Length: 295
Image (cartoon, rainbow, N blue to C red; front, side, top):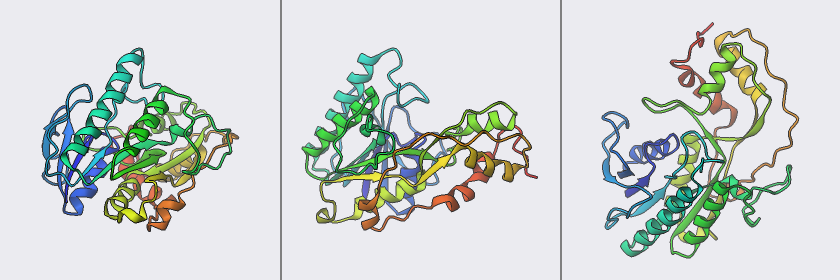
């Protein structure tokens, strides 16, 4: 299969590219700059792409995965920073141009990496299913919902509404919990929090399933992607066990969290790794962190 992946060198997109390479796909990474040599475990092609400009030619591409999103580094909600107009222009118009280019080129399947942020202002504790209409309460969520709607008007579109994605970082990158781990290991106070998470490899497995599923199995093409309801206390307890860190754990959060149901993906055979995958990922996520000595 010939795939094109936007945002393929990002913290999330890298998992998608690596899974595609492992499956034997021919991958073209659509990013501003080509990946550094050795960034991926195999050879990829590169085409220059920026959401503010025209898409590259997509002729001959079997499937497009749109994981790119223009935002302030490290921020999704609030990712517009102090330039909401630029944020809107890049993500709204840029995504529409990309989807239209895919349709003109006859790309058979377009997968859009959306977010649980489209469920925005549902009350805490709501069970989030794909049947609920989007109710975003952030500009980030609004842009994701608008892109979903645009994709729904095109043939072959699939939306994956992913929760927070964790996992080891690529070469030269820092994973999403690197700062949190560093603060805890340094003995700094950590505020309570709980939320839903999915490993990047499990997200990539979901992408593979919807890439290969026959159209009649995809329904309306919208799928939730979530695995763990994880409290920081639980996460940092695993970190303390792995490192022998003696610092006190933060209290458990009393926040009520809306959990995403993933029955649609489960019906396609999706089985995320749960806590076992988190445990297995910790050693790689500790590499290079100050104070992360093994006991």
